[in-house]
Length: 371
Image (cartoon, rainbow, N blue to C red):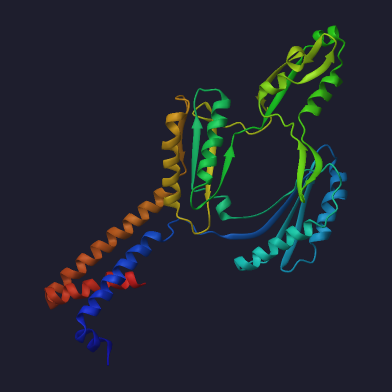
C-alpha cells in the first residue's frame, strides 16, 4: 500500500503524526545552537613553564630542551617551536590538521602525561598546558566595569561577576582584563624597631612562622586514623596586626606595634581605561556549539542581579555583542520565510484554488519540522 493511500484511509493517525512532528520540530528549533562563527580547532598545545630569576640560556638548557625531548615522537605531531626568555619557557606543539576532536583530546592527554616525566629544576612555578581554538580569540561579549571609584571596588565587583557568569550554562570561561594581583604591604617603623632592639629579620621570621599550615601526622583511635595539622593561614589583614614578633617580661610586641599593614595592588600589569576612567573588562567565552544568545541573556541577568548591591559609581557596559549580527540574521531568515510562504500561497491560490494552496503550504513547515 502506498503512503498516499494509507494516509487517506487513516486521516486521524496522519493528523496526529503531523501535529507531533510540528511540536517536536518547534522544540528542536528552540534548542539549536545560535552562534555567529563555528568553532575552528587550531590543533596547537602550549606548554608554559615560569622559572623566575633565571637567565634565558639557563632556562633553555634546564627547561625548554628537556620538554622538547619529552614531546618528540608523539603521533601526528607536525612541529615543535619554542621561545625562551628570562624567567619563562614556552613550547608550542602543532599537530596535523583535520584531526577529530576525540583524537586531538587523546593527543592532548598524551602531552600532559609526557610532561609529568620531565625532571624540572627546583624553583620552577606550576606549568600551564593548554590547547586553544578560534573561540579563545572571539569572545561572545565583553562586559566593561568602569567608574570614578577606587580600583579595589572595581576589582572585587569584576571578580564576583566573573564567578557568577562562569556558573551559567554554555559558558566555558571568563577572562579578566585590567585586574592586578593583590598583595599585603608591611611597612615597618625603623625607629620603633631600633628602640625595641628588634631586627627586621625577626619581623620577617614572625610573619613567615605565623602564615603557614603544618601537617602533624596521624593519631589512631579505636582502629580509626585521623590526620592532624596546625592551621596557621592568615585570611584577614587585621590578623597580621596580632602576629607576635617578640615576647618579653613586660609583655609581647605585636606586628601592629612596629609596622603598618595595608592591602595594595601590583603596579605591574595591564592598565585598562574606558572613556577616560579606570576599568576592568570581562571577556566571556562559550563552549563549542553553545547558544550565544542564551549566554548573553545570562550575562544580562547576572548584571541585573549584581547591580543593586554594587557601588553606585560603577557602570556596566556591554561591548562586542556578537548576537547583534546573529539576531539580525535570524530576523532576515524569518522575514524571508514568511514572505516566501505567503507569496507561494497566493500564487497557488490563483492557479489551483485555495484548498490545494493551503495543503501545499502546510507541507513546507512540516518538512522543516521533520528535518
